[in-house]
Structure formats: structure tokens, C-alpha cells
Length: 526
Image 1 (cartoon, rainbow, N blue to C red):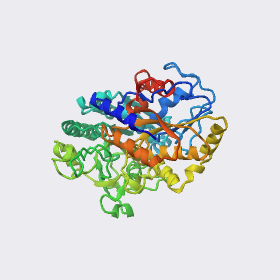
Image 2 (tube, rainbow, N blue to C red):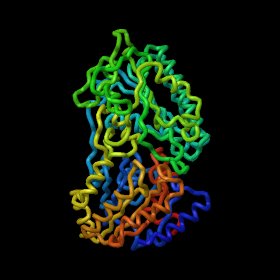
Image 3 (cartoon, rainbow, N blue to C red):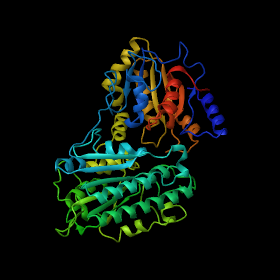
Image 4 (cartoon, rainbow, N blue to C red):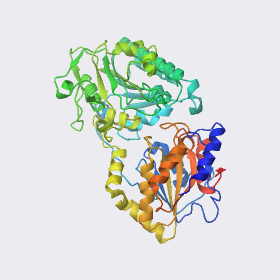
């Protein structure tokens, strides 16, 4: 596979100041002509693990009533997501069925006849709703949702607190009203800013989140709530790698868990006897249910870490999640949180029950040593147990060779080969993203060729968030090596993740240019 043309095109774009995340669509010369294009004889594999990220581009191909921008009406194009997120049409059948745990924290609260509020900002909307509810789109009975718009991604560095102030204002109002026995507040800024190489913005982000924690804590105590404070994974606490290069990806750091405003005492359980940091996110939901005097379902394998020390404890809870806030070294030269003025966080371990939780690897259903992410964190927190994550399930199938015999894949490839069609693989050019990785796209491309498909086209999604902003060229080299010379694959398009995987409803600005590159060959030629 020749990568030289795309590599040079990327260099040209980098020289213009472009970066991988918002890389404008680039297309192979001649793509979109009669011989090289997407046709109704083809199959498109969307090797994206995050359904919320692929939803807009998938809708453009699959929804016959789609009206956001003009599209080609493909009638027989086979569309196969890697993992089912939302069944878009009869033409979409995923390689891996989605695991949807029942009896989540939100479900138990709803069944008890209690109202609940989910409050966050748009950049993390699916996490405070879909993932926290066990991959359920619909609200539970008695559940309300308020989602505040996030700043535009290209302008994050100018808004290090993102929309935290508005989230706090709404949280204070909800706590004062007292209508919701359970309120889940997601403070998204830490995860958003932790992926950006800007030390000052990272420090100011930590201070904004800490101020939010203090404000919500005070409102909770004033209105008869206890606060459960935690995080879903680490990222903000580590700005540099050991070699001094920017650390922009998630970490394996433990995360905090504190209880404020309740006379909670350590539970006499095996979980409470584990050393700090060996308790997990799965223990949070059972702990909250115990303190709210609600039943803990048998499906929850997590264990309460604390129990009420007094019958007079408040039964209403606000759960504050500091997204991306890991426990890092107390080094103000490498840890933005340590460099920041964060009195509320520093008091957390002194105000009541406090411990640290693992939020990575097998404790959240991921492979050993793998960093946590927002999807796994919110899912585990809501479910009260570790759910085998798609990344682990897919990696196991790849390592064992089972993916090549996947029924859905085999049937699609044989159908395409029989009508002399092509396979299109929409894949992440990344090794660290929770959205997908190179190995998954390579495995699907290899399996397609193995089952008789003679033309395989790769549509690369540049990362630039979990990888360096201009790391695409090195990843291209890795892709070529892993694919090898025996797979008849060509790169057809390369598009920034901010374009192809927009989830903010920017159909005209981002989804449409991505679609036109893939279907019509419109973009910067390489």
C-alpha cells in the first residue's frame, strides 16, 4: 500500500497550521470517478467503537428520510458498524452485539418511585445519559435531563472551564428546589482540556472544576443532600511523559471517591479491606444505594465501601463527577492539578469518608494495563459492575482469529464478492483512542480479502486528541506495516475526527464535507 502521497499531503496541511483532529477531508486523486467510488454493490464497515460518534455519518448513509444535506440514495449498500449502538435500518447489522446491563443505579432509583436529574454539557451528553444508564437512550420514569451547550471544540483553550459555570448554576437551583432525591452532575472540563497541550489552560481548568465542586458541595449541605464525589478516569493530572513530551491521552491513574455531608463509616466488607486504589468504580453505585437506604440489586457485583453511621443521615444524594480528574504525583511541574489552587479537592480527604478507586484495565472491563475512558467509567459507575468492554471483546476476537469467521462479516463479504463489489473500511488512524484503533480496521480489511473481496478501500479518521496533533504520518507508517503487502487495500480518504465523527449536530459544517469526500471524492487531493 502506497502511503507516500497522503504523507506528503499531511505535511502540506501541517505547514498550513492544520492538525489531525480537524483535518479537512483529503481524497485520493481520481476517487469518486466511475471506477473508484462507493456503489450499491459495496459494503461499508464502520470500525468505530463509539456509536454516538458514528451516528451522524451513519445516518447520512442509512436513513432514507435524512434531510440535513443532499445525499446519494444507496438502496443495497451494506452498512456494518463494529458495535451496535442504535439500529438505523434493516441494512445495518453490527459485528458485535451491544451489552446493555439492567438494574443500573438510575434504574433502581426510578423503580423506587424517586425523581432524578442528569446534568452536564453537550460534549459529554451521551455519558451522563446513555452510558450511565447502561447504554439506554430513553430516560427512566421520573428522570429529567438538562444538557448545557459546550464551547466550540476549536475554541476550548479560550474557555478552560468550558460550560462548568452554567452547569453549577443549574445544579445549585436543583439542589435548592429539592425535587430530585438523586442528582448526577458531570463536570466535563477536565477531560476536555486534558487532551489539549496547553499548561496554563489545564491549570485554570483544574481551578474552575474545583470552584464548581466547592459550590455544589455548599449547596448540597445547605439543602439536606450528601455529596458523592468521584471521577471516571485520569487525564488532567498528567501533562507530560517521562521524556518531556506532552501527555494528551487518558491514564491508568486511580481516581478520588469522597463522601461529604453524611456520617458514613467504612463498611465491614471485603471491598473496604482492600488497600486504597484497589477499590473500583463498580463500588460507587452500591455505596450510594446503601446510603440512600435503597436495595442493591443482585446484578451489582460492586460492594458498598461505606454505610450510614447514623439513622439521621440525609437520604438525598448529589453525585459530582469530575471528568478526567485522576490522582497524580504531587508535582506542580508536571501535574496541572498539583499546580492549581484547588482547596475543595484538597479538603475532600478531610471532610468525611475518602478513598481512591481504580478506573482502568479489568476493573472497568478493559484489557490489563489499558487506560480508562469516559464510556467505560460512566458505564461502570452506573452499572455497579464491570461490563466487558467492546475494546476487550474485539481485541479477543482479533487475537484468536475469530473475527475472520464472524457470521455478519463473512455473509457480507461473500455477497459483495459475488456481485464484484468493494469493501470500504471507515477506521480510526490511532492506537490510543477509545473510539477505535488501527488493529480493528486492519483485521476487517484482512478478513474481507480472505473471503474473496478484491478491492478494499480505507477511509481513515485522523485522531489528534488521544495522539499528538500532528502524529498522523507516523501512524500511517504503522498502518502500512500491519496491513502488509498481501491485502489489496488502498487509502481512499483521510478526514479529521472532528469532521467525520462530529456528535454536536454540525451536519452542514462537518458531516456533509466528510460524506462528500467519501462518496463524491470532494476534498484536498493526494
